[in-house]
Length: 318
Image 1 (tube, rainbow, N blue to C red):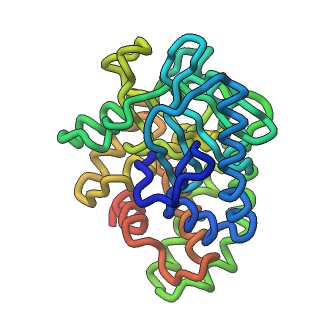
Image 2: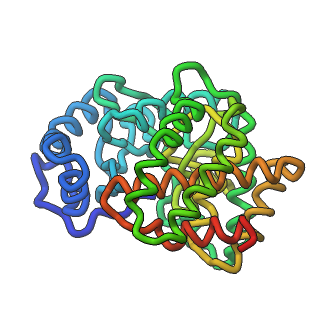
C-alpha cells in the first residue's frame, strides 16, 4: 500500500517530492545503497517522465521500497502511476508477473510500460483513496481478497521467477541457528513446529504464480475511467512460483484479529478451492510464520512477532 508522501523533503528539480519516511526507511534497511537510490530518484523521475511522455498529476505516494508518482500520459490523457523502485530479487519479477496476470485477465494492476535497467514501472492508475483495508465490513474484505487471490493463483508461474522450493531450502537450513537466538522457550518450540510442518510439504512446492504480499492495503478499487468500476485490483506483488497455501498469511496478519484467524483461514481456503488440501495450506501458512520468525531472529529480535505466533497457535489448535 502506498501512502501520500507527508511529511516531504523539499521539491527537487520541480519534478517530485521525496517523502522523509521513504528516505529514512531506505537508509535504515539498505544503508549506502538505499541513500544512493533516494539521491537518484529526481533524475530517474525526470528521465521517465520524458521517455514516456508523462506529466505529474498530484502529490507523490510511497511505500516501504518505492516512490509512486500520479501522472497523466500526454499522448492520450490516460491517468497512470509511475512506480520507482530499486531492482532486487523481490522486485525483479514484478513486470513478468503483471504481464502474465494481464494476459490471463487475472485482476492485477495493468503494466503499461517498464524500464528493465532502472526497474521503473508505468502502471494503470487505481483509486488510492479506496484500499480494501478501508472497508467497514472486515469479513466482506476477506471475502473480496479471497476472490482476487483465487484469480491470481489460477495462473501458472512463468519461467525465471523465484521459486518457493529454493526459498524453503534456505529457510530450513537456517532453523537450527535461529532457534538458538530466540529467548523464549515457547517461541523456540513453535519455530520448530513450523519447520516440521514445512518439511512435510517441502517436496511439492507448487508451480502457481504467487503474489506473496496480498494484504488488504495491496488491493485497491479500480477506476471507472479505466473500465474497472466496482472491481478490486491487486498491486505491488513480490512474485514467486509456488503453492497457493503460501499466499494466505498476509490476509490473516493484516487487520489482525486473533478470534478471526481460523474463520479467515477457512474462508480463504474455500475461495481458493483448497478445502480438501486444508492441512497442506495450514503447513504452508506455518511456513510464513517460520519465514518471519527467521527474519526476526536474524535481525536481532528475541521473539517471534506476537501476532504471527498467535496465528500459528490458532492454526495448530492451541
